[in-house]
Length: 509
Image (tube, rainbow, N blue to C red):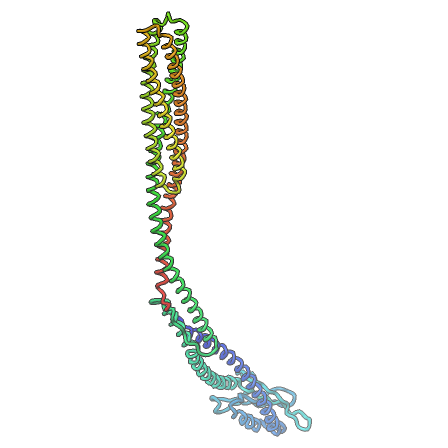
């Protein structure tokens, strides 16, 4: 059972009125009772005074019949239950009467002990000229008191109940008009907000300045603030949905770009490793060239010593010519080998240059992360150019060596034919050998430079590999961050749509 405000207030009024009626009934009961008792005492006093006067003659003459007639007449009053008199100071009953047959008659009593009904007893002396003739008793019945109380209380209760009923009806009607009706308006307003589309444009008409009016005004102010708040939430939800969509698209593009950068960096790392292997091979070749150049230098020194010996003793020219011829042939062979090695070094330098160009292109694709890699690739290209210049110098020197060797061979042939020109040829041969020695020394220096350059290339490629590894790690972290950002923006976008849906359930305009 649902109790309305009107029913609750009415119940409170009923309880209050009932309590007031009960209290008033008790107060009225005791008041009427005290009034009736007072009235009965007055009645008893007046009756005993009258009885003492009326029985004066009968007691003085000791006329019992007269006394009984007087006493019977007194019992005609329904309020009087019994009357009795005694003679002298002796309280022995002289004559007595009490009501009988429901108050319609009276009967004589022989003793006061037969009076069993609850009564109010009044007693008085019957005197004449100061002499006590006897004692008179009047018994006023308490049934009269009860009847009087019942009648009085019944009338009062009926009157009070009618008054309470009228008051309660008036209060209930006024409650319905003053309290229940405004509260129903407020309830209807709240129902429109809580049900259906959540209409926040609902307002309650404010009349008067009582508590209900203040409540309605506060309700309107509250709904107005909620309306403003929900309106702002809807606007912010739209902005949030648009922003999260843009962020989500940007995060997707960033994730794709990071994935592409990681793939590019992997390719560049592979290319750098291949260039490093090529540089290590070039270093081995350069060391081999340096060793061959050292051998050539020793041979040149031996040739120079042989030339000096030829100047000192031409008689051993013929024997030593063969040795010189063999040395020159070996020198020619070594020169040929050096030429092949120089050719290989030149090819390696060209390949290193090509790889450095490719590395520069890949570094430019990497953007900000590939700047360090681009610097290293430029250094590799510079070292490749120096290697090509050095091989060109070595090639020129080898050409000179080959030319000198050919000249020495021709000199040998002429020496065999003309020993007398041996000294001149020996001197020429010595000069050629000196040039050869110088060329070999230059070749050794060039080979050393090539080896040093290749060593620097290897160091540069190590640094390049480390830089690429760092860039790769950073790119992977960027990829993970982009994926996390994409997930976060997806969740944020979902929250924005939920917030928009929730705010859309309210009508604000």
